[in-house]
Image (cartoon, rainbow, N blue to C red):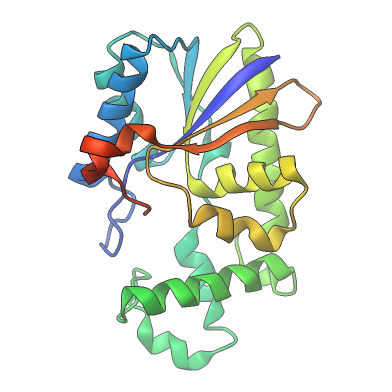
Length: 230
């Protein structure tokens, strides 16, 4: 049985043309997390990361702080779902929304309105009633995250595994571990902090067992300026 530590990537570039890019704060968050875990003498056998740019950059920043060499393994099944594609698909039901989105998927409206539309878009995606509108339907995303966990069996010799991933896979795994309905995924996701740590016990052919969710003591107190949620 392995202890798997899921780490949410650092703050990305919300609202920018290239979301998949750590902000300066995002780099600081992951470097600080690595330094804190190193100071606590927390040992990992291997570092797994998703294949997105923000995952790669987060891993690099983490290792700068951790200051101990770790083998890094890329597993793209740990990638986030395409949130911009999910949002654009909402306009298939509501044509009036089409004018609100630029070609890169950025909405020309306030952040509050964007978040409200995002929750609505995710509910549509999860319903399964419009699967042809998505290159990755909801059930395909669920299956992909299951494959991500199964891929850790290839690292069976490692008992302490760190994984840098995104809020979607962390929230979905939590939901499955606790037997929660799919509609709750975004409720969990919205509360996950950048660089937050969630821990699971994992044994191949068994569902991950949640031990802790969203640990973020490293961005409190005098480090509260490093706290962000997206």
